[in-house]
Image (cartoon, rainbow, N blue to C red; front, top):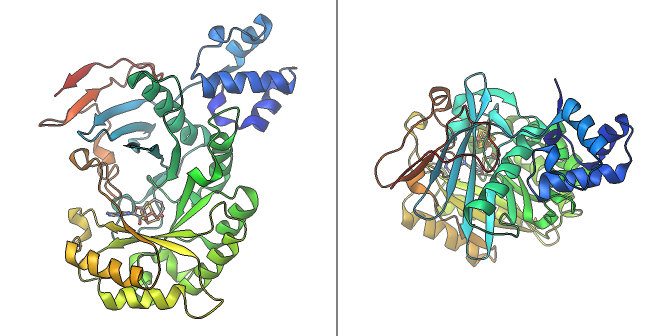
Length: 386
Ligand code: SAH
Ligand code: SF4
């Protein structure tokens, strides 16, 4: 087995090159070819010595995850389903906006946290993704999009670790992957533009603050422990008071001066103005004790097994008003890619059945990429249905 170079951050690649008897600057050149130019064939890397290219051919490869399907929404959102083997798949979503392009990246196949309102959680946990599997989502998407949109410069300006899985339960792969995203010789994203979203793995929040302090989003979803224990079972291990203390510690090193609290709006469960008032008390109980935060209200994306319903628009507005009136910046997440099931919590809900190439019908514009294809970002587009 040769090494997949997508598995390495720059230090890892330097160590790999050293084992081949090569200096660190060669690793930097190689890293730039792979991540900045999207190259996967060593013979294309023209400024590397021929002897090194020959050595690389026998010891290494650059290989993204195989693409099972790709769906392009009418609003430009693109969702890819990648095969991670063993009948499992993960999803990655690109969300274009006027001033940015955001990639929503997965960190695990399935998730062990088992939140009640999350279809990934309902699937159970299959396995952690490797560094290369996390990085390959960005590598593939960025270079595919440059081709697809005919752009020479960077298309993806933001990464959110909000796909499938709990990133802080795959910490040892997450951190090197984040380093690749941030590295100026690779994607050069600023720490403010890379967000880790967590259901609240308190000790790992502290470690992230020390090792790689990127922007942090915390999935709160409830204003008290009784309700949060039920919705986010991890709360029984790390209750709200501990979580908020960890948020305050993180703020001392965070690239932004606030934490984003995500709050999934569930009809009749956590969406009354009483809940909102309780939240206000939680994040600003008194002078000096405030947790600097913003709230992002996410309309629940229903799936049948949850037995839960989306809050009404009126409930969301009333809830949001209580927070805003208390001086807390509050946004309501727009649902994007509705026509291709690309919204939060809808990701790979039925992964186990999706190991074959599939076609979507109707108004959806679907490009199907055959899985047997050698997948490079320039992968062949087989079919386009409008
Ligand atoms: N595991 C991490 C990151 C992935 S989930 C976390 O929980 O933060 C990304 C976001 O989508 C989280 O805020 C999560 O609570 C939310 N989410 C999950 N399922 C959802 C659903 N069905 N509808 C709306 N939001 C959902
Ligand atoms: Fe896991 Fe996040 Fe889904 Fe909870 S919301 S089950 S932590 S992916």
